[in-house]
Length: 223
Image (cartoon, rainbow, N blue to C red):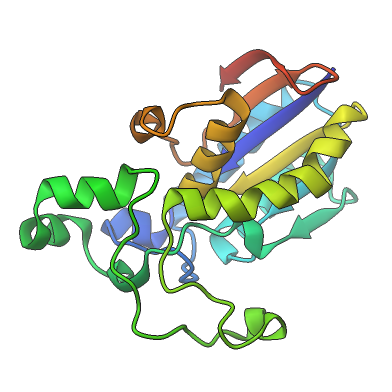
């Protein structure tokens, strides 16, 4: 049996200010740093033996992973950073206040953009330029993503890097974002396209799965 831990980063400045973020690179708040520390302290009590930690290329997730690894005294464990675990791209909503978008577009439309599996937010007019992604080509960065599109990029990483380690009995820690963790939860728990709408993932609260050799869930805990 192996254990998988999914952890959403601690509170970011965008979380605090109720702003859509996506691939924008915002820092943790002091409260977010404290949440990451508490998450590490809780995980330290479980006797986990992580052989790898996986995170996005965005600083709020990377710093959370670093803090947790310090709490667990596993600095020597490999830390893998991948764009595939980035938050869902919110397109033209990025940087806007969520409450103001509800006033402008209506609560029902905003709920679809935020929670629907297939609805794509308003797109950017053109892709951003960010040096982290230049090796993949000019049009690599998305203009906007649905949760389904985010899942489509997460699953290959799961199949190639996380799942095989778990099958071999190696505990794995994934520190990512609300949407990409929701995507993984949908995949792992076989949640329907409509059922995933109601799934929430809180900042800094580890989700622990006990998995058998075929990656079937034996137990799930939120600590």
